[in-house]
Each structure stands twice: as structure tokens, then as C-alpha cells.
Image 1 (cartoon, rainbow, N blue to C red):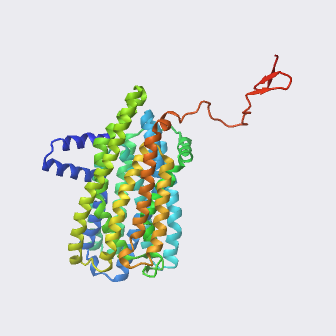
Image 2: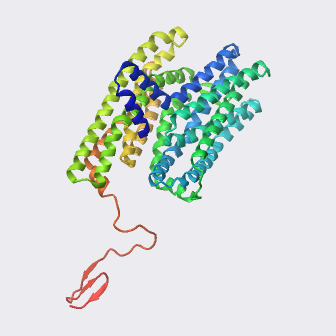
Image 3: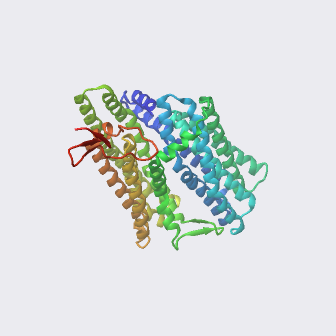
Amino acid sequence: MAGIGVRLNRIFSKNTITTNLFGFGYSMVITIAPMFLVIIAIMLMQALLGFSKLGYAPRELYSCTVLYIFIFAMLAASPFNAVLSKYLSDVIYNETYEDILPCYYVGLVMNIVLSCVMGIPFCVREYLVGGVELFFVFAGYCGFIALVLVFYSMLYLNICKDYKKVSFFFLIGMAAAVLLSLVLVYLAEMEVTYAMLISLDAGFLVIGCLELALVKSYFRKNSGRYREVLVYFKKHWQLIVTNFLYTSGLYVHNFVFWSTDMRIVVANSFVCMTAYDMATCIAVFTNITASVIFISRVEMYFHERYKGYSEAVIGGRGIDIENAKQRMFSQLAEELMNLVRIQFIISVVIFFVCIILLPQFGFGGMVMRIYPCLAAGYFVLFIMYAAIIFQYYYNDMRGAVMTSVSFFIATLLGSIFATKLPSIWYGIGLVIGSTAGWAVSYYRLRVMEKTLDIHIFCSGNILKKGRGKKPSNKVYEKEFFGQEKAAGQKISP
């Protein structure tokens, strides 16, 4: 991501209000713009097609379908993204670019197969038990698979630093979705929820096809080394566990409240709790700028210190390595503190704006009672994720697994406990889980700071690893009669 850092440094180096605002906007475009484009497209379709005038049942069915598409598409992609990112980084470092297409195809097949396994049983239940029309069920399933393709292909374009093109593809796809929905409703006279769902499917498919075409235009050669990709999944299983548990932890507190008596069941298949889910969405938006801030500052400042330490390790003196390490960890601590300070100010401002304005737009009652605790939880969660990224920098896979496991388990147990509390404390499970994960990640970063030399210089093997019978560990033996043996052979006195 060094290319982003160069661009941001040029923008922020002028140090004016205009350039700072432009830099912040540029950071948003390369990080969270796709998500906002999807949300804007859905809101436009609802406003233009009179979605609010529909009956309660079709509105809830459409809303739950879209909600499930996004949540489970992210869960389906989570076991693969971190491992494939590691493989791609190694391939780019070794400049064996012909190995990227095999990686893309293997990962795509595995991701689609897992998604089908997840989606087909649910769709069968939705049709047979829920009584939903087959066409609507199939449209929802196609949207799920198309979004899986979008999320998967985004990984490769992000590795290639094509953030602006990803945002542009989302703009094209969502614009096409809005236009298609208008055509289907006002010209083809299709039912509104059907038209909106089909249009979203088409938009996701357009984005996925554009991403696939761009990936294939970048990497034209195929080495055929598919086996090496599969070996990476076995070798770096910690990345699978970390990313999957972190992504699951983002939603496990929602799943817990979906199992309570306050849940809403739609078509005997979809389960949700509208007040809690809406409060979760607002809390995420309250703290989403943490991603922008973190990526921007890491690109501008920490990356250079990390690069300087790596160069010192390769060919520097001992004192140079030690000085570079101290500067790097000082910068790491400074970036975490700056992230906390800046995001705290932004979150407080957005929090008060939401508390004052949202009730005037119908977001009141239980939603606003649940919101404050969840906002605090997501504030800590984004700080925790920044620490996990730093653990990836230092290849602390054990620490990353410990962080994600503690975050997931603490969030799950805390949310179960929170269901017995007043509504204002419903989000305490996320606060507990994020705090636990942050504590573990911070502890592991301190351990890594003290033992980095051992981690860097003592992680190799003197003997080449292989399969077979383990040789004897006996290297010397002294007999009773003064005769000596070395490695099992008799030696004359």
C-alpha cells in the first residue's frame, strides 16, 4: 500500500484546510466508498420506487434478504482472504506474477463451493417451509453468489493498489442497478421488491465482471502451480482462524439477540431484531472513519519506519538495527495513540449529532437506547483491529489467533449475559469482547517488541525439514572398558 502513502504525503504536505479535507476525502474513496455507494443505491431505489408504501411483509422479506446476503457473503469470504493476501504478497515479492492466476482460480472455486454449501440448504428451507416464491428465492441466491464474487475479486485489486478503480466499478454497478430498477418497475411493471432485488443482483454481477476482467488484464500468464496455493492454506492456518473469528465476532452479538424473544421471524426462515440491528448499523457508521485514519497514517508514517528496519536487518550494523527497531516501535505506539485521540473526537461529535437529529427522522426509542453502548464497543473494536494489522506486520500469528479467539468468545459470552440486562446495556457484550481482544493484542505487541530480535534472527532451521524416520539423537557414547563410540561407531582407544 506504499502507493497510497506517497499520494497522501503529497496532499497533506501542503498543510492547508483545503488539502486536509481533500486528503480525507481521497482516503474515504480508497477505503469505504464502495460501502457507501451500495447504501446510497439502495436508498435511492427505495425512494424512487415507493418502497415505504408497500405492505409490512414484503418490505421485511426484502430487507432481511439483503441483510443476509451481505452478512453471509462476508462470512463466506473471511476464511480465504487473509491466506490469499499472504500468498499474493509473497508472489509479488518474488516477482513470480504467473502464479497469481492459479491463486485466483483456486481461491474462487473454494469460495464459491463454500458459498453454495451455505446458501442452498437455506434457500430450500425458505422455499419449502417459508413459502417464498421460487423466483424470489433464486434471485436472492444469485445476489449472494454475485456479492461473494465481488468481495473475492476486490482482494486482488486491493493488492494491486487499484482502490480508485474498485470505487469506480461500484459506481458503475450501483448506477446500473438504480436505472434497471426504474425500467423494471415503470416499464416492465414488475413488483417493486422483485425489481429491487434483481437490480441489485445485476449491479453486483456488473461489478464482479469488471473486477474479473481487470484482474485478467493485469495477469495474463498462468504457471499452473495450483498445488502451492493449497499448501499455503495448511501452512498458514492461523490466518484462516484469525480472520474468520474476527469477522464472526462482528456479528455474533447480533446472532445472540436474534435468538431472544425480541426477534422477528420472516417467512419462517429469516431471523432478525430490527432495533438492535439498526443500532449496530449506526454505531458502525459512528466509528467507520477509524479505518480511513488508520490506513492513511500507517501509509504515511509507519510504513517508512518498518521499511527502514527491514533494510537495516538486511545489511546494517547492530546499532543501526537497534535504533531502527526503537524508531519503528515508537512510531507504532504513536500511531495507535493518534488513532485513539482523533477517532475519539470524531466519534463524540457524530454521537451527539446522532442523538440530537436521528429521533427527528424516526430513529428513537429502543434504537437510541441500545446505540451508545454499541458505539463504545465499535470504537474499541476498530482500535483492536489496528493492533491485529500490526501483528500481521511482525508475523505474530500466534498473537493474532489469541486476539481473535479472545474477542469472539468474550463477545459471545458477554452478549448472552447482556440479554438479561436493561436495553441500555444490550451492547455491553461487544464492549467486553473488544476490550478483551485489545488487551491481548496490546500484550502481544509488547512481547514482540521485547523479543523481536529472537523472532527475526532465530526462526530458521539448521537442517532441512523432511519426511521419514527420525535419526537417533545420540551423538557420543563412552563404553565401560575405556573404548569410545561416536555416532554409534566404535573408536579404538
